[in-house]
Image (cartoon, rainbow, N blue to C red; front, side, top):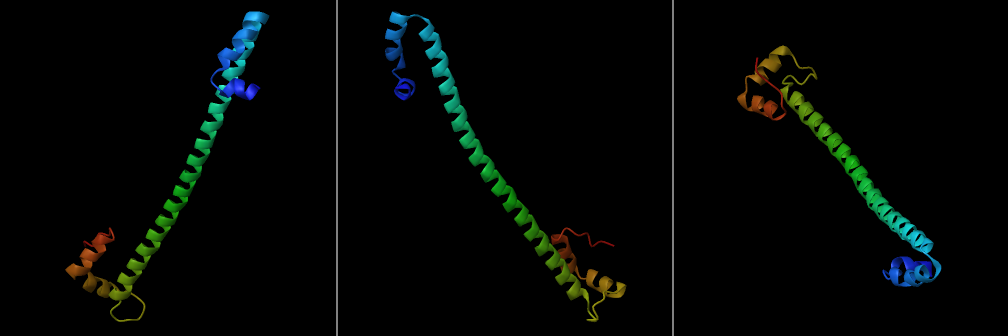
Length: 121
């Protein structure tokens, strides 16, 4: 069968009698046939690996986006916590005097530095 001829690895022993008895045209046909099938099989295997790789890469991008969004939400929460703590009067507004008082505290300026905010005057 053609399957045995192509994938058994012994195709020269099957084709040699045809070439010797019927002519060199069969050699050309089988050379092109074996080359084409082998090339097609490599392309299929490569496509399967590429498909899996792209699927994993897409999942990795989605995961990275989710991590960035989580980091942004955490950063916003830390910043909101700072401003709530800085509102000494508790009126929901931060006056310049309250901000100056908070920024005079070295510990709170260090906290702002961990948020990559420059607290220098």
